[in-house]
Length: 473
Image (cartoon, rainbow, N blue to C red):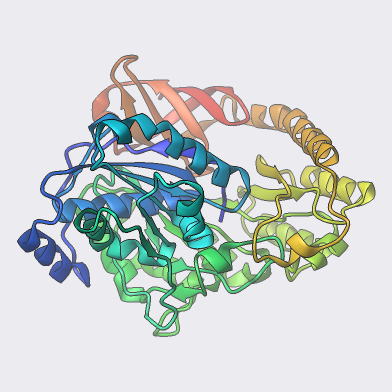
């Protein structure tokens, strides 16, 4: 899963009515009958990847069904939840730090409940409460749908900590998308968990084994979201390429079905695994472009075959480059991004240089690069020859500098081009708009609010590595 080390705080707005179609109709009725929340304010902060952001949306929706009230400020909350990633070490430290900032709130309001969820909850379990007694409840990624009951237990038995982090491996993945305020673009989960067991990755231990949602549920979700104004969906999974429905449809079939069976204007997806990215998917993307956007996030992790083998990635440098060349042949306008780990145990200077050379050879317009961080339960954490921290830092700086120099020149090709932009935000203070191109470029330009939700032509006047400026044609 593409992880950009972001921290986001949801800003609840007047929610549109969520209409559950599958499992949550009965739950919604139960919450309304029991009146669990009694109007208590809930505040959620989120660290990590798109999956965590989507999970926070789900938490808000579930708690709102239980009559909790989303708030923008922890000062207004009676329930504070930190939904945190544990792919790297730093977010775990951030959790402890953030909980500490709520100490005075807890002193003023002893009834305030503080909870930790996400991958950190799955990984750390009761250790979180042992190390930070201000925490009242902990839950894992497989326990989100029990969140109203978890919070209720915390209020009913205030002296007892609540810890629910068990995986439900045998249960089918039958949930629906719950989004309070989907806006123009939103996420739709299609898989959860991962079976790849890369030696550096904690995801199989924090999100469990891989499961796919039924094909018809995904299609119905998107149709329902469209009725609420959604124009674009991003289908999510730790490895979307390994999607396999109960009726035998694979990921390429699912994308084609979304295009043919719904009228959604744009489809994106993340994250792909190179070993499972096949020609069938490339051809489906080409056939239905631009409704299926020509942006592909294809994590390489390392440009050296020996390091890739130690990572258990399932492909070599040569195989990856061959796949990239095939993508460029079938999808000549495709824009690629990637994830990279520098300083993996045993990585030599020459192996690191292989990564730099591959980045420049492929021509990624965006990279998400991080220093290797040992994670609990993973094989790589036990490897010998851990790379010193100063070496990892120096290599990361070198990689980012090399890519930045290349991409600053590369993105100039967009200047003067007219691109299709789906407008998704309006800034009333500046009377300006922003939106994304099919290449996943953020574009800012002047315009009126009534353009939100429309796909319009924008001429690019200035291009930067991460954003662009333009004018409406």
